Length: 241
Image (cartoon, rainbow, N blue to C red; front, side, top):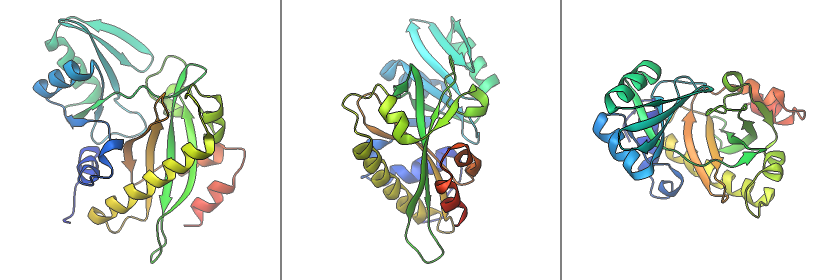
């Protein structure tokens, strides 16, 4: 497999090539007026984000409210736009001209606040991939992103988040094991296009039914998130790589 772009769009296309991963990938497309229109009519609720952004930067939620009306949610701010032209202008301002549009997943929540998961997958130079750490990022009140700094959210252990979540019939052990399995498959697929990478931070999530989703892959993840956990053993394991 030839070398690919490390943008969100580039990595998504690599992951999408693996049929085993497709059920876990929210539909994602390059943001163009026609594509955005089609995605909104199909899902009525999408996320638009810069293809090169990080840390929740430039992430906008868009909901189709009625013919010609769109509710946009950026940071803690919500407003309604009354034309597609106004929407495109708003998205260009906040998400930039190079962005992707993604099917919005109704994330599992803790006390009404959505959370997603950071899953660290690493390998030594001649070793196999291992899941070396997992945690949950709980969004701050009223925010669309789970990035802790941007949303004033918090970091908790994944097991705690699952126990306190609204996932029906949640079993933290079973859900965590399923996430590990998907994370390892994802790392193996990404290695085909990015063979020199040995550390991948996956943003993954559960929806309210406990289904696993892959939101995006990061090659320069913030390792300091794991220092915020009371148990520092995951952080020490990650840093040993």
